[in-house]
Image (cartoon, rainbow, N blue to C red; front, side, top):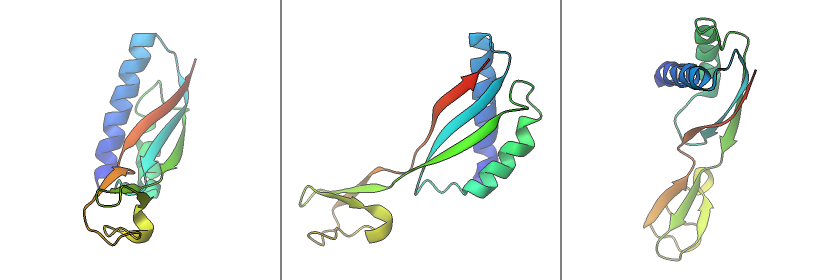
Length: 114
C-alpha cells in the first residue's frame, strides 16, 4: 500500500511548509490525484485520517481530493484522447505510438491555513 508512504511524505512536506511560513494550523489541503496514478483514494483518505492526528498542525485538517483526468498523446496523428477509455492504442488512427501526458501525478493544489 503505497498510499501510506505518500501520506507520510505529504504530512512531512506540510509540517515543513507550516514551519517555514509560521502557520499555526492547516485547515484544508486540496490534493490533485491523477486518474491513473495508482493511488486508491479511499485508502489514501484512511491513511490521511490516521496520520494527521500525529501532526499537530494537521490534526483538524480536511483533505479534499480532486481527480486529474488521464490524457494520452498520439505521435502518429498528433491528437489526444482519454486514456482510461481507449488505453494505449489511439482511437483515431489505431497507432500504438502513444504517450501519457497527464493523469499519473499527485500534486498539492491548495493549502488553507491560519
